[in-house]
Image 1: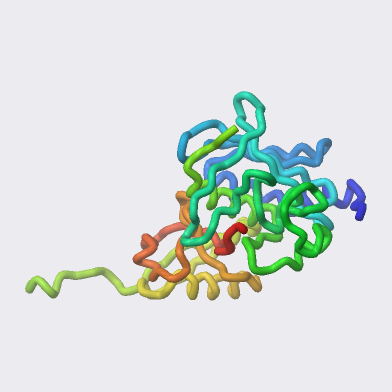
Image 2: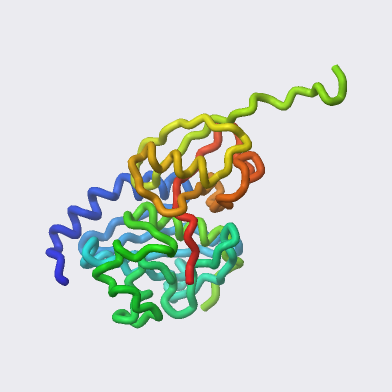
Length: 154
Length: 90
């Protein structure tokens, strides 16, 4: 499914005030790279205080979920987030795809992840897991699970 | 004042709830003993959301256990809470 670039930009920019407001409340900066269609969040891992960059590639959004990735903000190297239980539930962080949740394109088999679900085009209809259907809600969940994460790993 | 008559403060707490996609918060007053999940459902309805298993995230980023009473989850008067999904990963 192809979403015209101009539609994706308009959709993201409509959600941007909420994203920025949430990020500011929680000590993160956010940059909207509309040329590259990426949202870039920068902050610290709450456990080891390492500078962390969280990137959402939003090409195709909202027909497709974003593709989320983590980087060490100093070296630029990809990293993964260690898992910690969140209020009795398993972490959304996953060694292979980064985030095992319907709002991450990389979680779907079609994009190299472990889950079939109904395919990334049906991400808004996947229920029973960590559910977030707007960018600010997704980032809020990531921050919540990050709070319980014991650290980062290469 | 007898030992058992010590004041415990009002039985309710007022909090500022944000729905992350909506910049402006709403204020809610709930009994301290209300469960986090019940309060989050009420907040979600007020924001017009059909949220699945909603819960709150506190200002420190921690996602709160839906089964705990607000006061036992550490919620205090004047706190700023975010409405989020309680669902976990797989």
